Image 1 (cartoon, one colour):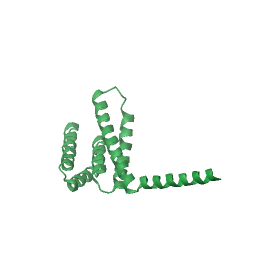
Image 2 (spheres, rainbow, N blue to C red):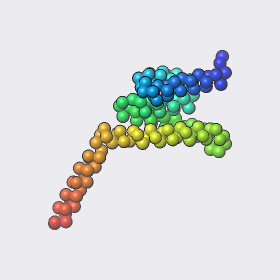
Image 3 (spheres, rainbow, N blue to C red):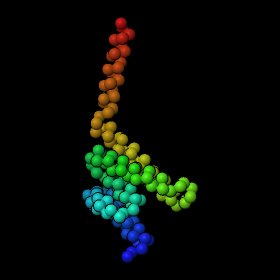
Image 4 (cartoon, one colour):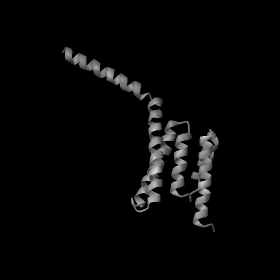
Length: 140
């Protein structure tokens, strides 16, 4: 049976490999490896979160990417509940790093969702309609 350190090392290597594909524009390979990692029911939460973030940043469909982001954030929040802040500086740093990655992904996805569903155009249309209603009411 492998010890805990060698198991973490294997997950670290595979997660880093998926990230390397991402940074080198091997997006299909990144998605395939991240999916493969997620299929492992024994994978620790940290690596699961990393794989979900990679998928959220990689897949073309913004709705699917958002689902990955939501799942990653749920696991991150669960993990935060298990660790008391300021008890272990290393854990605090890792959780902060993951939190920053999730914030960045969420911000990017919000822009993509706005573009996909044309929220800006809808807001402009609603604003124009509200102005027309206000003008009509002012004339009464």
